[in-house]
Length: 283
Image (tube, rainbow, N blue to C red; front, side, top):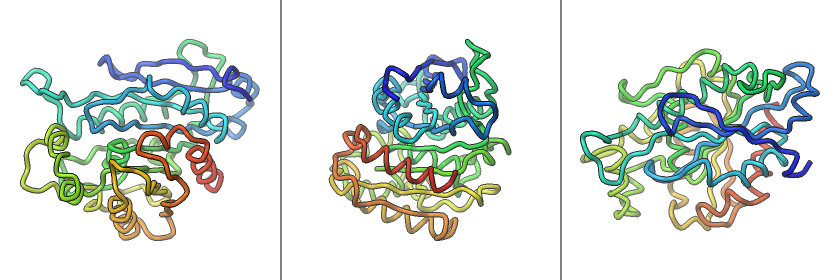
């Protein structure tokens, strides 16, 4: 398989301009599949960018590498972003970003065939894996763990919850107060995403518990010691919290394989191979 064998299509999962998702698949593979068991799983990537930047257009090479190395069909979703200069007209706070991602995931899991080509069933929607980077990791924790505050809880369908087999979180923001103690200048984008608060404990995944109907989901925490934007303390904190929330047998970590910085690591074979190994153990 080469990059030229991989087809990319953009689809809309909602009415907003940023409600878009790119799907990368190998047409010959999905056409030849005779049933769900023969079709590739779906791997969905949720990008980072401090809740105010980032776009799926930055990740076609990464997505194609993931298709090639993991054997999955890969989706990269956009979601609405918090403005750098908020006004009453464009104000957007957490958990709106997570609600958008939830809508994208529900759309993908309910997909039977590609809208533009009903001869293609691009993936097995009963085997879904998720990967979130930076604030994308926080978003996935918000969706698949149980926040302390009820108004942050986003209900997900039984079909989505049962389809998700594994979640990878890498270079993520998990303990916001701890992050600000280490990187005080980050207060700008934290307030942009969450508003001004004396403490962000209730908005931190390290304080979340297990969500109902997620007892089958496995988690993988990845962190590069070479990341200068998010430090190892975040990965350590969320690993400990996940073990307490969902059980040690369903949480693993890799904090030594990758050595690149925050964004560079996503574009390496090593990153794709870590995901491929994790997915292979859960198929």
